[in-house]
Image (cartoon, rainbow, N blue to C red):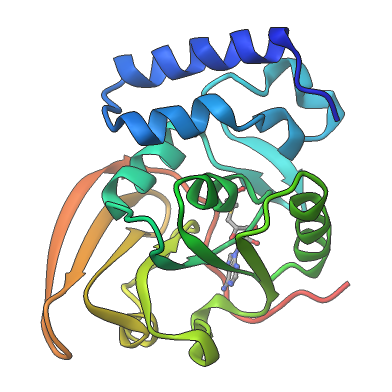
Length: 215
Ligand code: SAH
């Protein structure tokens, strides 16, 4: 896999586009400017990899649009060393962005094909701070809880209580909630029973499903 001046040039344009669309966190923009998104897509999409669009990654799933990745990442307010649980590994692009920002990433995927493929890819491109798990994200990862941050990258009909249980007090969960379309929610856990919820714009994600899909 090669990252050329051509790709770097396209990434710079993408970063400018994201700034124009309102993304302002310099660290997030830097991470998007540094990470070759075309590594996470099939060769057929190489030319389009730096368009601000979602693309198919197989198994009926998609890599999120860069704007969405940037928006969700901003809302997480990441600190170096944060332990973060991502639900929906997909292509691994979002997980790699979190790792570049200094987080310790635990990511769960329910499609075994994607889990296998992405685990290998992250290893090949030298992203070592991401640990991949195959399973149903509805369960979270109790063995590794609690987390400082939880990021759900599939559209959920509710805020899963099970995941809130695995979040530290003062931790943040970012999750798109809704069925056909979702509203982005940023949830701060105030104590074991109370949360503070902020709602942001409307997005379109693939659904947060139940159970696993084995090869
Ligand atoms: N973060 C990904 C986005 C992938 S799309 C990226 O950067 O590419 C959302 C992903 O969530 C899909 O791969 C889908 O299979 C996965 N998913 C949906 N429901 C899930 C669940 N219950 N547990 C784990 N993963 C789930």
